[in-house]
Length: 476
Image (tube, rainbow, N blue to C red; front, top):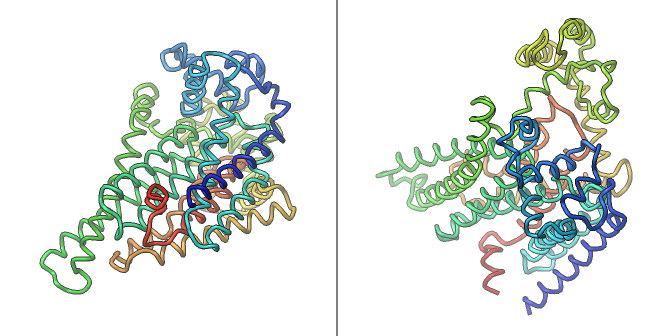
């Protein structure tokens, strides 16, 4: 009976996903036809320098073995991690260079989100859980990020795949933490290891998720230290605060955190070594171009920035501190290479100028960034319309509910600090997808993770704390 329900839900979600995709994809997008091989797609985007066009070009170079070996192509690995290039190269090889390349990508995208939404719907057995999951899935499928971007004209961008894997990573991590008291160590290792692997893969697809992973790494190292010290000093202590249950919980938590760290760091290490070897030891994050944002922030409007860059607030320091901006512009335009880091100012000097202004007079910058953030968040959600406002409100409520659910589910055997920090995994992960943008640009699509991830994670957490959605599904 349960298997039949699962099949029905899969069929319904697959039908909805097919409708969503076909509604924006039937005539192709950005000049790419509905059916094309990798070579045909590249020819179709000739002259286009958008992210998706460069992903396709990088995939072709990767197949030829020239992406890393040829220094003239390094700008591609400086601006973007190699995940999308590797993904498209794999699809091209699997499709044998035929026009099924784009169709296979479409099928992978539909399959990923069908699995994700279906799994989140069937987490709980009670009606309330099913209703929450169904409502979340319906809201996501009808939202602007899905219809207008992820499954619309921009399906070849990284968001469609990366946000799904990122959401699944956070959801499985929360499940592992919730089940510390009720799962075997092998299950905990498998679940937390899978979460770390998914975070690593999403980082290879989109660099901002590497920043989230590194932030979680720092937090987990601190929690590991707390657990180790607590376990060490509890030996021989028979007090209630250090009973055997507490020690067992701490050991299980150490297994979860260590498994996640090994999986995430081990999977991302190869690319960090490639970046360190080719670009220097200072470029070991998945976004080695990030120092350039300090220079971009000081570029005046008269420099000829495109409209999208101005609306994204890419030159936010100039908007906030026009007098300093003008002084820097005079010096830079007198050099041979303005705003490149090799002119009158280095990237470090651009950063020092920005931080100096922010620390001495923060209000203009905070007001400016808040203005850009609100405008682009509303645009990401679909504008000041009922559906967009519902999406923002629902995501905010989902983040709060996920935090509260996680906190209530954590055993009292947890150390108070550990319990508090672990409760904020969904909220903290969502915030870290946006915080790095404070010194960069605010494109609407950058807000998609924090709008989508909470709804996915919340439906996963409707499952009862004493069970596991993974075990219940596989054993049904």
